[in-house]
View 1 (tube, helix red, strand yellow):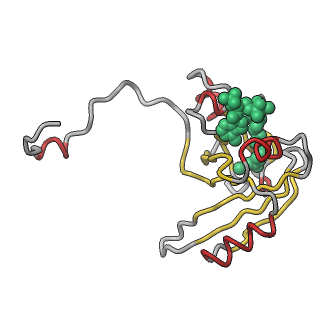
View 2 (cartoon, helix red, strand yellow; view 1 turned 90 degrees about the vertical axis):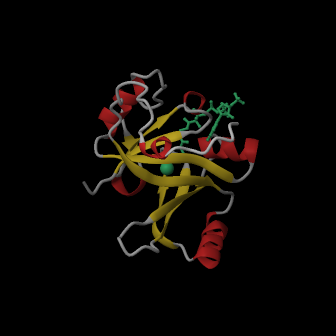
Length: 165
Ligand code: CMX
Ligand code: CO
């Protein structure tokens, strides 16, 4: 590493563009999904330790989970942070398999988009395997698609289109 002082331009010039920006349609980090053995115990931990509140709870039979969307909203600009706690409801579900292999922990990241089918098609053009040919039902009427973790640097990635847009 050089001892030379940094010039101002090193900090103000944008890095050279690696090429055209691809279309993904992503708007935000929507939630972080966390696999757990006992949903009620995990809710209690996040509530009592950090002050998260339960925004929504449901069973999603297709995904094989009982889940809770937890929210904490500590900012004055309306921005909220969501965690999705996932407890498997059957042994052949993806979350049950994950827990058996890894134990409890971070299971996936979910990015928001206004058009999940279009975003999935855009990402798929870059060689990322899209696991759902058609969007499936997600939390609270949302529509979701998963991307293969082996094509995403080891991160299981969900694209989600909220029901409220
Ligand atoms: N994050 C990172 N890597 C993962 C992973 C995860 N959550 N789940 C599996 N993998 C990796 C495994 O470690 C394994 O890697 P190695 O081959 O290097 O050991 C590889 O992927 C295959 O794992 P597997 O246990 O054999 O699992 P499958 O291939 O049967 O399934 C996956 C993996 C991603 C295709 C499957 O879990 C899936 O379709 N997931 C999407 C649906 C889902 O997860 N739903 C629950 C959440 C619902 C919601 O958010 O609403
Ligand atoms: Co999710």
